[in-house]
Amino acid sequence: MLNVENKVVIITGSSSGIGAATAKLLAKNGARVILGARRIDRLEAIAKDIHAEGGIAEYQALDVTQHSQLEAIVQFAQSKFDRVDVLINNAGIMPLSTLDQLKVEEWDRMIDVNIKGVLYGIAAALPVMKAQKAGQIINLSSIGGHTVFSTAAVYCATKFAVGAISEGLRQEVGGDIRVTVISPGVTESELADSISDETARIGMQEFRRLSIPAEAIARAILFAISQPDDVDVSEMIVRPTASP
Ligand code: NDP
Image (cartoon, rainbow, N blue to C red; front, top):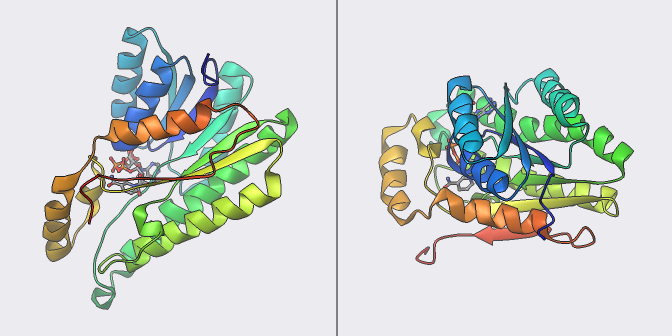
């Protein structure tokens, strides 16, 4: 039996892309999933699909830039299912542009969602997992968390930060709590929709022709969760075979 059945899994940013695919795959494998994102209509539709397949899913509106909303979704999970086994800090945005365009508001938003959102998730879930003496936190980084590319200095900085936070957390809480960082390469999703800069958007559209399906990342997440409790898949890079 996979070590995923009945687990209570909160997934941030599960209204599209990797988060939505992960919710569906985990539910299909017996997890009880809690979906969170801002587009509640999308969450409702995904939860309905999961229910139609016999799975268990709940959802709640979530803006990861608000610490209180991460606390609220953790409490919601506890009120429904009494525990939280896994938190997947997946929500992220990628408005690419060169630094000299000084898109300061976009830098702020990336830092707020991609870094602070992950920290707020950890802050909300860690006390619960420590009390349970068990749990797993899975953070979504990127190949951009390993290599910097032009137009992506701030995005890559946020993803390097996710790697650093994950490794620090793993060293501090390892034993009872597993920490996993997943770094996708180019994957089908709505991530590039947030790019306001025309040149960066066109460049990314070209690169995205290589995309692998969001389910490929969902399978990596399922693999990390389904290992025995004493096995921590601490890091995975999953990218298209054809990546340069
Ligand atoms: P999508 O744009 O499809 O999904 C991003 C999700 O994040 C959406 O569900 C969105 O929901 C949510 N989100 C954005 N802002 C917030 C917020 N403030 N609060 C709560 N949720 C928010 O992209 P992906 O599925 O690709 O992205 C998932 C993760 O994977 C991200 O961390 C991304 O950086 C990472 N990644 C993706 C790659 C790719 O090629 N696709 C490559 C490398 C990493 P809503 O708008 O409804 O709130």
